[in-house]
Length: 373
View (tube, rainbow, N blue to C red):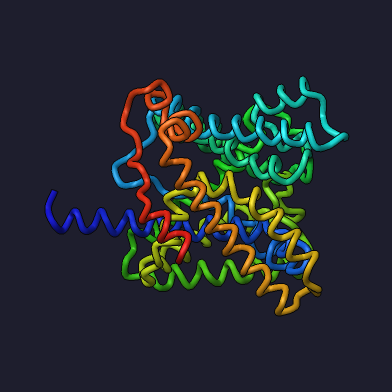
């Protein structure tokens, strides 16, 4: 590899990690109880219509196309931590709470990837993302093996089906399908639109500034529309827009947000914390509510917060920062433990069974830098 190509590859990896880190920070902010109770507009009309969805449409690294043989890796990589965390949370709630779903019903829903249907607290609710990502990535692997005309036809059907899912209105019935398959056509529609927008951004360098400006303008107008109409786009609850404009916002906005964030990572050299949040996004995603819920509970009990106040914003920022750093530090520690890395966060079936490459252990210096930044 030449020095130039190596530097280009390093820059791409930097931008990719920074992009994922910013998205992860947006997720932590959106799931923050202070944000939801005292900064309502920031959570629902401004973040919820793009912050998690953008992870579905992240472009693959150059040269890595999904193949059918990767399907099992996706299943192991995403569903293993999902199942472990779901079971751990359910056991903890079964011990500490009286009003809890039966073990048999809960086990069936968890195994089907529908833990969010249990409605047993916010930690299980936010885990809808992993089974949905699993079914989406496996579907992409399968479709990529079809001849081009068939692949185009299938994508067209899924695109139309996704719009149909969005137009069907607010219903949780599809959420009972295994691995959240009911929402996958909608994710495909979003991905197809995103591929077109990201292709414009990445290929037309002379128009890049105009494309970024247009994406930022669409985001701003989308937030204004949702605030004005009171409409909510929340994919985990199958709230995909009550009007054609809101439906269009839900399908286009994640790509627009991704364009703005990707451009920001090119213009701004983000620090190691943001990049680490991206590198360990899986661990931070799974752990953040375990820290954020008690931190917010303590702060809300001790401080007199008012809706939309400056002190509420400062308190939210402090709780988000503490949550992100704690989740990141614990996530790195878990990845440094060989057994946890292999059985909780495996990269694929080979690592789970004891073969394949393992991620390098996290050094004490990395942990110290995270805690003291």
